[in-house]
Image (cartoon, rainbow, N blue to C red; front, side, top):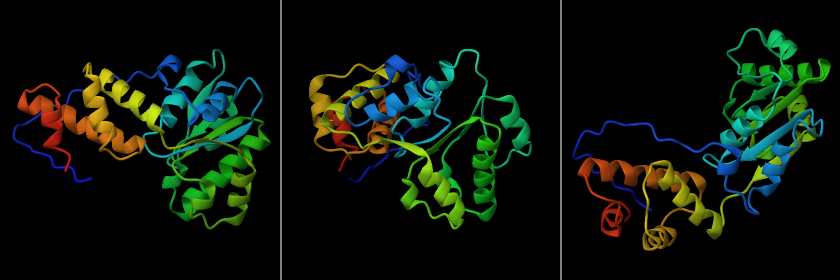
Amino acid sequence: MKIENDNSQLIIDLPTRAALGREDFLVNSRNEDAVYFIDNFHSQKINSGILIGSRGSGKTHLVNVLCSNLDSKKWSFLNPRNENIYDIFSINDLVIIEDINNFNSKEDEDFLFHSINLSKELNKALLLTSSLKISKLNFKTLDLVSRLDAMQAAFIEEPDDMLMEALIIKLFNDRQILIKPNIVNFLMQRIERSYLGVAEIIDLIDKVSLSKKKSVSISLIKGLIN
């Protein structure tokens, strides 16, 4: 799919309201295992786990759901730039490290290895997220790979047609745009079958619609998808 962007006018990029509550997450067979994993992460005493899904699949959404349901439990995000790793683990019940697929240096690997060991030493819950399966990560530290392989993993698979249709409608709704079924069907037949592909084309449609001051229509979309 080729996407053409007509920058005919300057657009003020207003933020959209993404619906990020538990009830807003679209659940079907492609992601229900991941939803169960998150819903039961702390209640079933899962001390460590990895949430895996491609970009745009909703990993951050599910992490937000988990954090909002922890009640009195303390949690914190952690990344390789943090210097007080021990203190962060000590004062929190759950530590979250996102996008480990972006770790690409020896220092990043050492940080992740140390974090996993600290979570076990201090008996703290550790949740990791990744856009790639562990076997696809190019980590050089074998002990780190071994520890990651031993962790419980939950996967968000690429969307099927039912989830694609629901996702298109949700992303337009997040932008306060109501669309007709014929537009949904038109997009379903032409856009990339991935979470990121859906998000990118709808973002482009929204921006071009605003810049041209036109409503979302099939004729507008035809000019963007070639």
